[in-house]
Image: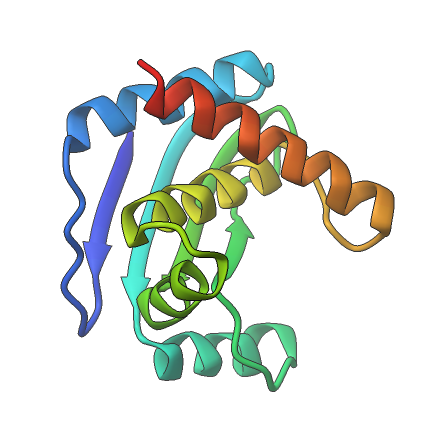
Length: 140
């Protein structure tokens, strides 16, 4: 099951059923089981509190992803996304807010599928996978 909720923000997320089906397809393509996934859209300040409390990071970020399942073959996770960061990044990268929101959502899903973004090589692969899924989603 995939859920969307908002904390103190409004999110113009369209075609939710199609998006949920696509995210399930992303997990299938990556050969990762999916039990439950909760997306929480929030403010910079809310996500900063989560970043500080759970990760000991004192920085703003666009996304924080938590894997909650003890079984590495099956995903049960939560993905927190700052709508403030999404808007700012969309402007910076000259893309629509909708496109950037989907990029970040797919980014979080890819983290839950085992992709990382700490090294240059990992970042490059993550960007390739994001682009691949953005093309698949928006070109349908």
